[in-house]
Image (cartoon, rainbow, N blue to C red; front, side, top):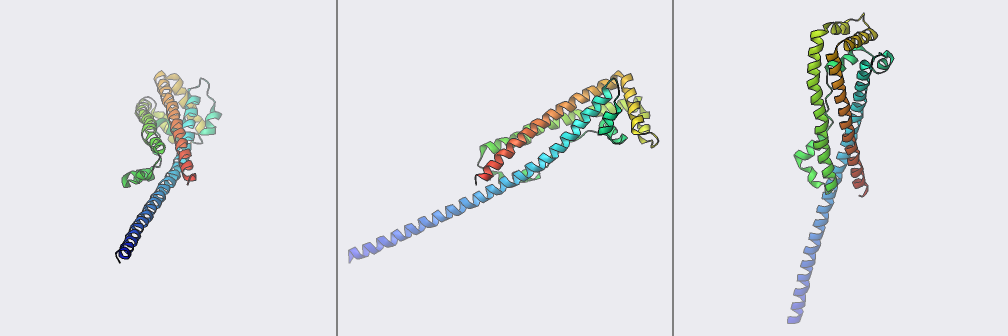
Length: 235
């Protein structure tokens, strides 16, 4: 009787242990599956944002290179109007170069939201985390620094133009004066004023630095995209 009861007890205890073990194992699988699903969601959202940022950067790169080409043409000893005309279709496009600065604000809503919600904790790749930090902190700060420098230079240029060449703005608003007239006046002013020319030369140097910083940002962005795609394909 004792052996029979002992055997029954042993079977029951074993069944309970097995049940608990299986339950724990299934729960762990469920947790792991949920974590993996969350990780994949984060990876895919980051990849979507990378593509958005890439489109934004390509647009900025195109405009910033155009800015350099316009300034280069204006600073040439001999004016080649056709070169500027291929880039700028109106007086306002050239005027924009002179008095406005281009900001740099890539779409980062998804990334910022993940920081606020703590979703980035689902990433298990230290490489991706490192690239994200480099992209959204170091590289982004570098590009924005050149924008701030340009902003300060624009203030100096506006003061110089309004003080010494107010007629340039009148020509810009005069519908009887076409783009070529405007460019000829501007080129003449630049060649006759060393301060104005020097200001544009310094600005163009910052334009080129800005483009170099943007290209580095885009290289890091591509590095991030490659890592994200590899992590998604592995699953």
